[in-house]
Image 1 (cartoon, rainbow, N blue to C red):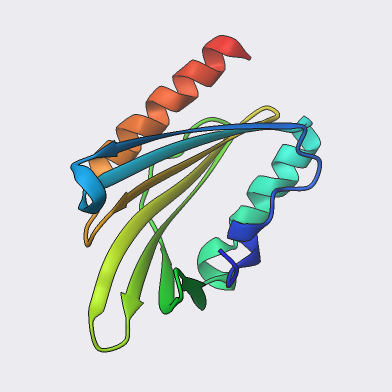
Image 2 (cartoon, rainbow, N blue to C red):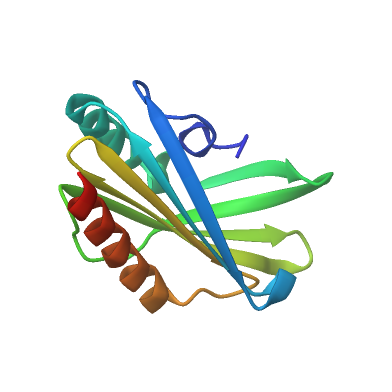
Length: 146
């Protein structure tokens, strides 16, 4: 997102990336996205440390999406510690005069040199239980592979 550099720029040292998205419930349903980024362990550690500032450095920002200006508010998300480091935040998008139009859980988990970026977004609310179970499943898949 252009209003928050932590969300719009890839971490330094990234050598590979792959993403997959699952949409449930049509255009206003849940969209769950998993992205894996491969880095050196040092670069992954630096990246998760940088992401730890997400709810502070990107607490409130605006971005233009499909020609409309949207205000985003980022807050820390209570989340279990997974892997070698975990960062979790809730991002709420709103239009002035309309209110909340979307909510998203953003979770970054580090395991060695792999970063798992998980996004669980919905039209006005998010099932954080799905976010937790999806993050655990993603970490299990990464642990089995690397």
